[in-house]
Amino acid sequence: MHGPVRPCCVGPASPSFCPPVCNMEPERAGGEAAADSEGGGAGAMCAEEEQNVLQELSELPVETAGKRPTCSRCSRPQKVCLCPFLPVHPLNVSTCLYIVQHPAEESRVLRTVPLLAACLPADKCKVFIGRRFSEERHPELAAVCQSLSTLVLYPGPEANNLEELELDPSQSPYNIVIIDGTWSQAKGMFYGNSLFRLPKQVQLKTSLSSQYIIRTQPTNTCLSTLECAAFALSIVEKNHCIHEVILRPLQALCSFQLQHGAQIHHSKEHLIKNGLYAKPMPKNKRKLNKMDRLVNNVKV
Image (cartoon, rainbow, N blue to C red; front, top):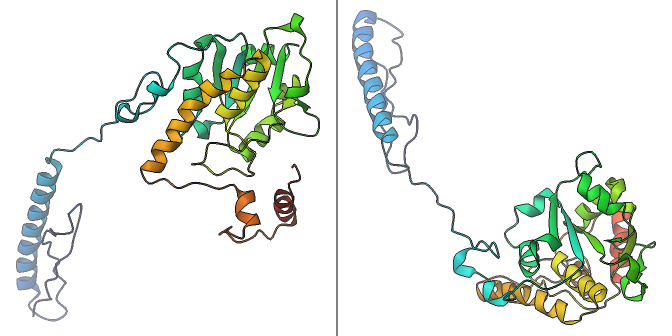
């Protein structure tokens, strides 16, 4: 009495194709020699069939996913290049921006730093990627942070309002250090690197809402890195046209995304105030207090 023959899938196979592979169960009583002979032959055939199928699959051509060609200036895919919205020539500024970027920002598709860099001369916008920065590993950045001509743009109770700060002309040209990342990432980088607490700390007093409406912000007045840089440069350079020029590619980016299915992202503050916050409220008291401060417009 022979055991049942059952089909099974072994190795790579498409849903519509399943190579027949036999598995002969052993006899339990009588006819052992015949069963061994037939089962061995069937098993050998199945193994050979399986090997042939695997060999054929391995010889199939593999389609490589080619990366879309990108524009060398705005770093956007060429089909959605934003260069028409960039200034024809880099802006003539004396202030130098030092962008310290969290590694996670580098892989984001809709990041704003490449657009910012495309608006400025190469030597006026320098990007450093990492979480931790030290004098040994980043001597240029350390020297800049130790300079009296450097400001670090990060909000807080000890920060001076940049609009009200009297800048010393003798210390010009100035440097501005800006942290690029989510708000929690920026907080970790600011307090995790003693270098960033050496320069004079400044913040923007502007009440303007962010125009980066395709990414969620904690509050209505939280600005993207590009927006912060645009307003800070306008103030330090005393040229209010600068922020209009730098914001132009950001506006074009958001407009294009919205036309192709993206949704407007309201801030957490807006969602909570209007009862639209979809996520469950946190149980942690510290996080609840933070949300209360958002609703009541108290700075955190």
